[in-house]
Image (cartoon, rainbow over all chains, first blue to last red; front, side, top):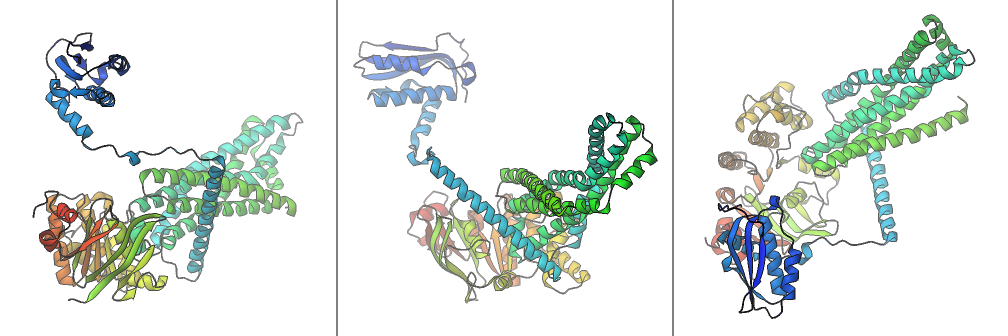
Length: 384
Length: 251
């Protein structure tokens, strides 16, 4: 777009001069390129408007050494102004390429209704729309859960269709492959619990009770919670992204046209795998957390390793582990539902896949924390 | 040859309150290669989605061999859909499965064939589309044109009565596109299938079509039905002439 003539650029890019025959000559010179900066149109506009009785505008581009789109936008503004003031602009003085681009830009008149209208809505209607969207979202969720239950019923009746290899693969992905991160996080959580407890308990010389704190804390609560949060970020998001990408690639459509229900074929193995693996991971996390606690006990509190484990054994009851396992089974269902639901509901473009993954994690974590609170209240009422 | 196979009856398509096309009425005969054509964004692919059961109509119906498709219950509709083969725009192969597994899935689901027999049929279908030897490749490991051909092999897995193609030549070079056209003709003749193609590729349209419908985005309805070669010669409608001549307006 740049047509360069080898003329040294002058400082004065724009010059307006009125001739004796009441016409205005606009003289352009130097470089008119976007990266060199463009003179303000405002000055020129003021000057043109202040001249009274103008008959026409002509252009002089003898001194113009180079130009690009910046020059065209400037000319378009002059054109607009001259037609508003009903002064004829004579384009013959412009370079050929500039004239052609000007014609191209004005060939198709602007479609007035194509511009997006910015409509300010009343607060009430905004609230109403949000509420309706919320209700629609809740309905979608109930529908999805219903379909998932239906798929499980089909599974129980032996009528569900999915590939066993898919199930094994998903079990491997959300079971064995999650072990390293679960190990690290739960060991550290055990460590943190022990540290926090030790500071307080040391004041009474009751360091040994760190074992109780860590053991009960991990088994009843933190083991299940931490695995659930790890799996929400790791596997829930992966489910949403996988299913969302399959939606974008029309892979889900391809299943549907074959009469294979995506709910059975894609969602069921994923939900099953996560529901089976989550309690196992939770149990593993409990043990890792206790190990973390023992590490602090032995290295910092001068407790014997045997002493620590005996204390843990005495403090813990099977009920504590069972409660943790119940929690983690419920979290497993919730994370699987959130991940698969966001994936299946995904829109048809790349941005929607990202949103689905994000939303899967957010939904899972909200579900986890809310249900955890409810469960704690229930256990409290049952006094277990 | 001439009995009606697919009837689109008074079909109106819409996304919510946004109208796509209204009052579509046409008949596709058995053995036809039927083209759904029109400019970009006129609703060609949406019409296809209505015909293959992915989107329900706002009004009207699609009839297969005289039987209502959208009035039928889900189980019946699923049975009807098994007689379709669909090639999606990008192939839509299941990315977690090899090409062979992709083609095998419908056979595993709907036939009682033994694994060895399925394997033989899969190899045949892949050979028919020129992909013999690529059984163990994953979709991401082959080119776009090959993915499309593998998608076609999957669409033909069950020897369908009707083959649907969504923009088969999109993203293909002229030679691959020509080969796909030849393959479509060959399949129609040898399988005796009815073929429905969504496309705006003129070369393709004139090479394979026996009948067509022209959808218009502005008036939101169909403007003509007929063999595109005859439409080109005889249609009085300037929009259709412009489309079929790439805007030259001359035959």
